[in-house]
Image (tube, rainbow, N blue to C red):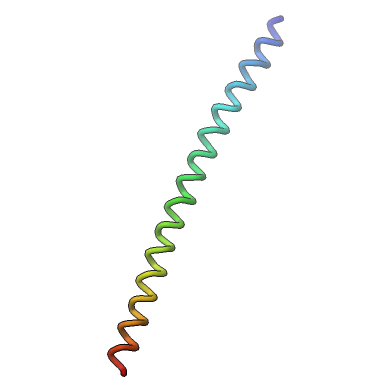
Length: 55
């Protein structure tokens, strides 16, 4: 009986850790996408303004 309860506690703890890890990864991916979009927008705007000045 003790081993079963220990196994159940270990599985629950693993799910908690997995949830925290997935949350951390999702946060990192979210910020990477936001930074990528900002860099892409700045690059596009700088190309538009540069081509407008040359013409």
